[in-house]
Length: 324
Image (cartoon, rainbow, N blue to C red; front, side, top):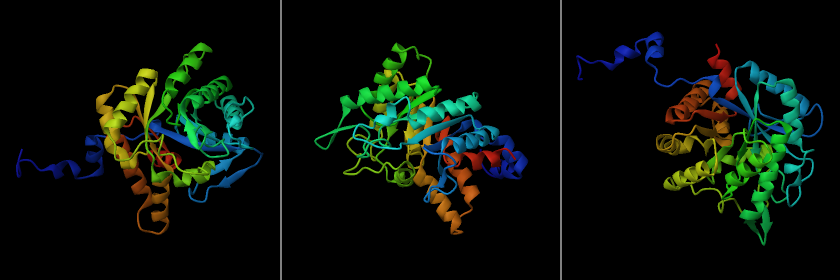
């Protein structure tokens, strides 16, 4: 096909024809909204680096979930901020933990809203790392037992899905085993399968109060230059029982999302992380970009790359625009 017989602009002439030939459809159904829950009552503290996002007590969190549900967003993912932290992050797997109480409250009010829980230790440990520390090193196998206990406690509280984000080797198998053995074989696992040691997590660490007190997480999170390794990580997690595999972050790793989508038949999630969100918000505040337009372009690019679902702090704003 060559000009002048073929003129691509014919199919761009107006909004109606553009909608008719649009190749990628972004829907509220694609979104998962992250929420930060903390102890107390009437608590709603805005996160300075993440405008419009809050550390919230359970009463306000449930109200936020009602808004999320009303926008047609099918799921939330919970991150807990404990009252006290310790070396072993004991509130993470306590039946009286903040996330466990939040799950019950949400499911009591909105049983049809899917509640996913982040399974990790970093928000709960005094050192801010994702597992057990010995001699300054995160211990992989000792951490697996605690992650499995945490996932089980979430399932017992009523979680619809668990999402291990720690990047310990073998954690999907450990979680699958304990869930199956305890009668929760129908709880899916959404694995943070390719989670990179990224500079885009800064605002989240403020939100979750999870900054490491020493060192960094490069010994367990993936090295950003690597792509073949991501395929190996995903394959391992699928073999261990993951039902959904995730890439995190999303925007700088669209190639990874695409490769995983082409290589495997499992549903793929992508996390449009805090730094990606905050850059859009900061530039829009300064008048450098059209915030809504860039937000939708970013989310569409993630969907176009192959993500079936997108974890994003933009979810409510994007859903409101899509619902117009």
